[in-house]
Length: 119
Image (cartoon, rainbow, N blue to C red; front, side, top):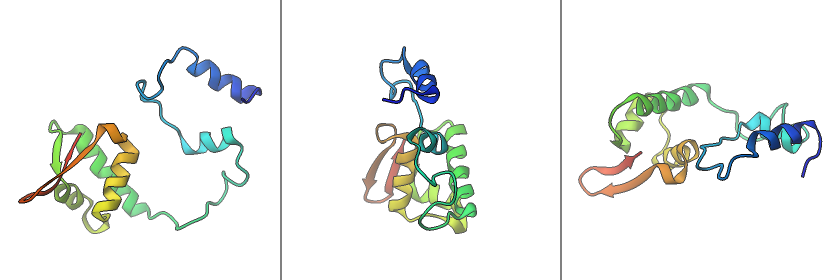
């Protein structure tokens, strides 16, 4: 357990919380890296560079889903929103689960429609 100023700040924020998942607590990558004190985490990162156009296209899908009154979409419909920067279906599933949590997004397959995404 951290006993420095940052550790005390985090502890004060979550002291009264019984379940972080129920409170929809989210990690912010820079904050987690700083908390874990990972050397070099604030500088350049390893791996493939992120494509800003693809990230923007995914955020467009998220905004659509969050602002729309429906809760069920076909995967094809969501991928079409991404346009030329669409993920593969598998990668889109992973990204949606990362963003909304495994219990908050459900994937099912219908023979005539394909993959259906329910929030």
